Length: 212
Image (tube, rainbow, N blue to C red; front, side):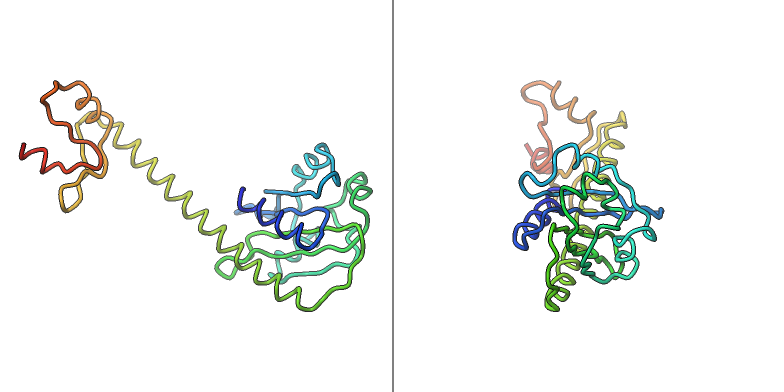
């Protein structure tokens, strides 16, 4: 979320948008939900931001969904009819201006959409589309890396909990005898041993301890 918020803030401020959000495609479903959002100072109240965060969109019912399906950035001159602005208070706060939609691309597939809304109509510059496409590809790669990191952390937590569930004293060594991991039973045994007992924990060399 931190990376998404930073992306929204940087683009929103640099291009003078009033509101930005990232709509995430929910896996194995046909809906989009607001995963992160940003607003220029005093443009939207906390209540309106909270209402926007709870919105759920279906790809066929909004500009965001159509951008997700095509995988191409889109400039919209007047966004007032899109379901993203279904709340009249939000429409009033933002005005009926232009909008920019950028699909996040990962592995050739759209995984979400960046949306930026303004309160005035702007002239669309052709160079913005190429720039937006590059932003979407970079964002998609970033999100994939975060997913991979989260999966690795989950795998490591599972491996640790599995080790800790075993009553036997277990230490995992590398090819040189260094201890990569120990389970809770091993740690308890080390903690309860006398002052001259083996003190072999993560990072130390088990073979060195055995030679003492």
